[in-house]
Length: 201
Image (cartoon, rainbow, N blue to C red; front, side, top):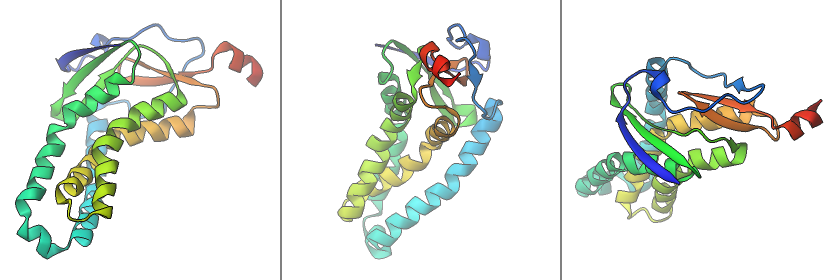
């Protein structure tokens, strides 16, 4: 496994690493335009963040949060600092080479790799950094409300993973049993390996 930092995405999808298409590959039904995708996902993250912040407020209490306001700001800054480690965790879930790009103009960072993987592997890869930086700290805060730093870290990180949830939903709703998925440029595809394709027939 090798992680390669590519930096700023130049906007040219053809410049992204990709392999050959698999036989009978099916493109995911997803938003094609990267600008539109970034806009939609960022807009969807806002109500999710309102919900997670409201839970933090209700669990911790308004007076406590005001008294220790700097702790909560530290949680926000930590969540922002975790954006790049978030992508590295995605990249570590690939077995071969993975490339990390930034597209801050559209509010996105993303990982590209050429290998294919099972649906379950894809879901774990998509979810892993959100568990580490989002759901686990958030759950710990709900159990121990004095851990305000973890509460805000989780409440901020969970909405930041909106693009990953989008990919998971696509995989769950579009990939049939036994299918594998891969990236080609900026888009996801699924296909059935020969043995599964024969069984389907």
